[in-house]
Picture 1 (cartoon, rainbow, N blue to C red):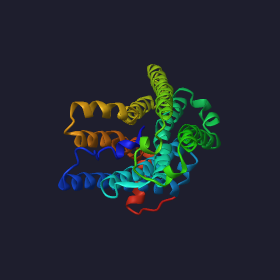
Picture 2 (picture 1 turned 90 degrees about the vertical axis):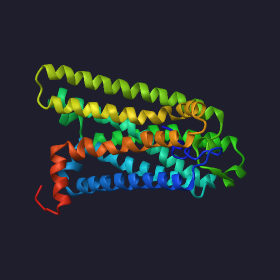
Picture 3 (picture 1 turned 180 degrees about the horizontal axis):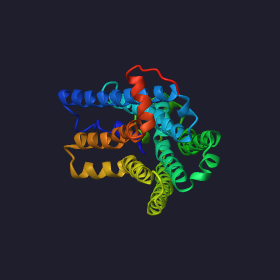
Picture 4 (picture 1 turned 90 degrees about the horizontal axis):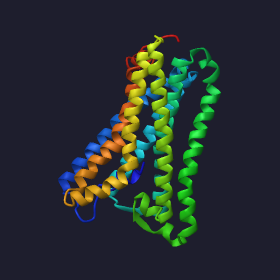
Length: 305
């Protein structure tokens, strides 16, 4: 979940040519605008129809979409800055980095919550209404943010305690390790990510296999729920690429020292962009109800709830 992969594509020793730099930036900006345009349509559809914002499933989904929009916007901004302005004020970089890390670390936790909601809807349908209420869903989203803020803000507090005041007025290449340089932060980050990985993957596997058991009993809509969990797992797998990006980056730099910018650009697309392009597919296209209302908005059709 290291957002610094957005900027690592510019390497001091092997800089891209002007043409290659422009090409990469155009690709990233076009992808970012496309994803955000689609997600904005999903948010607009959600906000226009009460059937969605009174349903915990869609509330969790739209929270994921909003996270994706913020993360993609910041990621693209940092990518472009790395090729243009290059170095920025540490304080400004801290703000960008904190927001990007909040939204990035929210994603796997949100996916785990969506998987649990799907499991409850299929395996415990009679209690779904009592367990998955709007109030509890909002509290769950608050818990997600509290967890990620506790994880990320500790980096800032450690930096404030260990770095001189002048450091925050200096200019750096905007990477997480540059604005939060203390070694203990890296160790803390690795341990935190390991805990997140274990919890989230255990949740994904548990809900998937419980739905498989329900499938043998002939539960209604189990096939669709099972496929949804698989998509969550695939999206989570892509999100996990950002967990491994720092270590994987070091390996690539050793293997391909003269092609760092290209391999790391590919890592950036896989770890930061692709996971955010899957969210619209899960509910925006696959979900029959959401797709129906989305089409109405796209074609400017107004109809009662």
